[in-house]
Length: 355
Image (cartoon, rainbow, N blue to C red; front, side):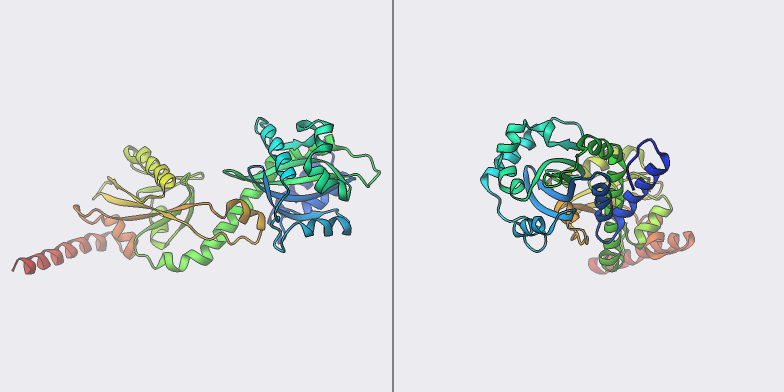
């Protein structure tokens, strides 16, 4: 299947391949194979970085046996790169510095380095020339702070076919929004799966409504009581993008608490007014293991912190009946009766203490 941007049917088929490939058992391998087939003379792979340092190489496509053996000697069995030469680090720093000013996810070595800089650089001399690889084109499809993952396509200089590097870059630029979106979608599904497998058991054992979000208030998981609270629109609304409080006067304060808790990883509390008794929110840093089958996601996102939000009663106020409904799965009438019973029990205990 060739790439033809002027053929809507071809473009639609390739975009479909992008989303299918992001979700397959070995993510991106089919799409990488398609690119190598559509643009002869290239080999492809996926690399992960932290700043200018490469620390993982995966999904090699189009390499011959000699080239694969060479790369495998540079990495451990799980794909993590072993110690790199100082000359390579210096070359990567130069590329990283020049790439910082480019507002694009697609980069080419010819745009960042002169021919002399590329051929004399440590990366080419130590790792590319020995196995016949030359100039490269990359597409960054995932980023988390200083960490990133890219698809990299390198010219196979042992293959005499004419290489269309500009056509490759143009195709990747056209497809980049779909590739980035597909990567996010696949990652969201992986997080949801992990949450369902690892969080639901102990989270549902917590009686209080509990929500797990990221730093942008995007909901990742809710226990049973928390889901009931969201379904009824009590305290929180779960929009397409992020959680928001139903109490307008507290929305900005809540987002501020969220940002501060993420920044210093210190628990915080917040009192929220409702139509009935006020409730208290407790925001606590929460770190779940990233168990994605895809090593790239582990490289880039395994340290991604989350927040647990617990919804409870205020010590100096009554017990909110809407929260009672969600916690104990009661009717509105039953929820009205239970706080009265609780207050009577507390009054009796206090009298015994005084006596």
